[in-house]
Length: 369
Ligand code: GDP
Image (cartoon, rainbow, N blue to C red; front, side, top):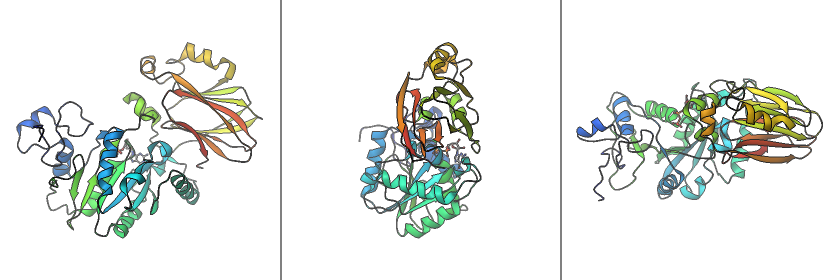
């Protein structure tokens, strides 16, 4: 109606500028008819989905469309960045449709993890955020573990519904969608990406053998995640790619730990105690005196305290300080969205602080492990 070129697969308005945004099509592909966006092209030709992203407002509009349908929603989150990747407003938009919470990247936790405890923790945190979920499924797209259980749960709850997959960026949504495509659609038959006339734009419908669809929504961008702020080269540093090696520090009050030049943890007040850092193994840790920490950062950021490089640091917002008082008698994590967390091991209280670029979500939460 607005005269814009639209994808004949999903109906999205086409654009040739930004590859990670919905509707991207390479310039030269505009010459072929019918014109479809790159995401639809990949599904049609390679049986493979790839990630596209949208901002929050756009995403909420998409979610609202699910509210009026009979849907099963797979909400996929990243266990490494749980509070950063949960879509906390999901419930408000999708109505009474059932939700399966797929908690991905469990391979990042140490092998000796108590998984029942993790599952309970997830259930409790989800409830606290106002999410009602039918089931919590711990999985690793990377190791293909937990997926059988997820597919079972999908069959169990799907009934006559389409399956919508929603998630933030980098949680492993494409990996999951690709698994679903392979398990639920007939590979001998050429997959066609069919547009549902006059309904949803921006969502890719992948038809299933039984006439239903898997619907891939774009990944929502949350600017409060460190992973959204850093340069691509640093994303590879802060996103762990193998199981975390927790680093234990015995600290006296008045000591700090730098996470390269990404952030800083201060132990301000309390008895000598131990703290465990759960961050990517590629982030170098430096212990120093709190009273020297500001000066050290001013002098050595981007060099001794790196990555990020001096240049990439200049593109990040200035640090702000978040102070917390940890009460006696509770095991807590200081959580920094996208960077990891620091477990406060003892339960005799402490005053602590985090310094990270402005806008990055920092909070204290009950210990994950
Ligand atoms: P999307 O942006 O949500 O579609 O996520 P992708 O499927 O593109 O994955 C994002 C990043 O997370 C990639 O670097 C993947 O290799 C990685 N990833 C996906 N699933 C897992 C997993 O189960 N474990 C680990 N460690 N990494 C994963």
